[in-house]
Image (cartoon, rainbow, N blue to C red; front, side, top):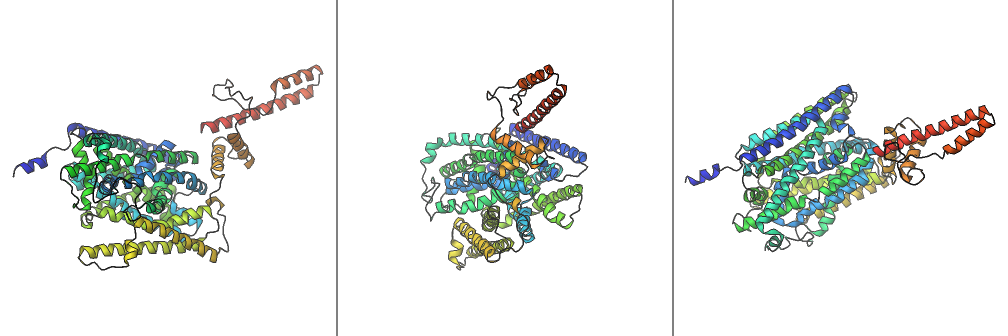
Length: 636
C-alpha cells in the first residue's frame, strides 16, 4: 500500500526541466516588457491619438512576424489534446485539418486581404456593417464574442487542465489561473504588438519541443515502417486520408464541408485576420500568409504522428484497448511525453505546451478587446478619445480574463466530451458568415436584404442542428433513445456544413435578386478587383516615398516604374553612387547638353545657354527625385 503513494510523488520534471521552463517565462516576460515600453512611448509621442497602435500594432508588422503569429494563434493547447487525441483514435485523416489549411491561408492572402486593406477596417464585423448593414455587423459581434468566450477559451482551458494534470504535480487550478493572469498582463500592457512578438518566440518553442518529441517517439516505436504495419479492426481506414463516404472523415466532406468551415476561420475570423491586416502593407500581409501556409505543413507531423504513435505504444502496454472510452485518447500526447522523454529533457515539451496555451489565450483576449472597443463602445460613443479607447480595450482584456477564471469550476461538469462539443458550434454557424464575405467581395449586386436573410436562416438551421444533437446525446446518456429528425441529426457534420453553405448562398442570391437595392452608396472599395493588389502597393510606396500629396499621375508614374522596371542603358550595373542600383534616365543626354552649351557659348548666345543650362538642371533634378523615389520603393 506504500508503493502507490511513492509512485505518485515520483518526480516528473527535473532541475534542468525547471530551468528550461524558467528561461522560457523570462524570455516571454522580457519581450512583453520591451514591447509594452515601446508602445507606451509611442502612445505618449502621439498624445494618445492613435488607438490602432494598441489594437493593430500601428499596422507595421513585418511579414515574418505575421507568419509566425498566424501559426501560433491557431495552434492552441487544444491541439496537443484534441488533435493528437483524435489522431490516436481515428488516424491520419485528421491531419487534413492542418494540411488543408494551406489553401485557406493562400485564399486569405490573394483574395480577401487586399479587400480588407482597401476598406481600411479594424474588425471583421465592421466590414460586414460597411458592406451590408448595421444588423449584420452587430449580429456578428454578438456571435463572435459568445463563441470566443464559450468555445475557444473553454477548449483552451479544458486542454490546459488535462495537460497540467498529466505532466506536473502543481495544483492545476492555481497553474491555470497564473497562466491566464500572466497572459492578460502582457496583452493589457502591450496590445497586439506584444501578442504578435511573443507568439513569434512561442512558434520557435513549439517547433523545438515538437520535433524533439517526434524524433524520440519515432525511435521508441521503431520508425515509420513499424508504425505503418499496425492494424486496428475498429479503424480499417486508419492510415488513409481520403476515406469512403460513410467513414467518419469522408473524402466528400473534406473537399466540401471542411473548406466551408476552414475558409470561414482563416479568412473571416477576427483572431486570424487581425494579424494579417496589422502588416505594414499588403505585400507583407500576403507574404505572411504564404509563410504561414508553409508552417502549417508541420503540425501534421508534430501532433498527428505522435498521436498515432501514442496509440500503438499505449495498446502494446495495455493502457488503451478497443473498448476504451473515446475521451481516454485525449491523454495520448501527454502520455507520450512521459513515456519517451526522460527527466531533464521534458522542459522544452512543457514549454511548448504552455506556449500553445498562452498564445491561444492572448489571441482571444486581444480580439475580444478589439471587437468590443471598435464595434460596441465606439459605436455608442463615437467621439471617444483614442486614449479612452485603449483603456477600454485593456478593461475588456481584464474582464475576459476574469470570465476565463470563472469557467474553471464549470469545466469538470461538462463531461469528458467537451472538446468534441465545443468544436461543433463554429462549423454550424460558419456557412452563412462565409457566404456573406465571399460573395460580398466578388459581386456588387448582393445586398443588405439578402445578407440579413442569409445570416438569419443559415445560423438558425445550424443552431437547430446543434441543439437537436445535444438533446439526442443527453437522452442517450439517460438511456432513452428517442429519434429526433434522425436523418437531419445523423448527417455527417462536414456534409451538413457544405449543404448549409449552398443553402445560405442561395438565399443571399435570391433575396438580392427579388429585392434589389434602390439606393446604394459607393462600395467599390469593398470589392475585389484584379489590379487591387498592385494599386495598394503603388499607393503605399507613393505615400512612403514622398508622393502622398501628388496627383494620381504620380501614383501612375510610380506604378509603371515598379511594374515595367527602370529605364537605363540595360547593363544593370550600379551607377557608382553606392546604393547598389543603376539610376534611371529620363532621356537626358548630358554629353549632348554639354556640347550644345559649348556651341551656344561659341555663338555668344548667352541667353540660350542659360535657358539650356536651366533645362539641363531641371531634367537632372527630375531624374534625381524620381531615382530617390524608386530606390525608396525598392527598400520598402
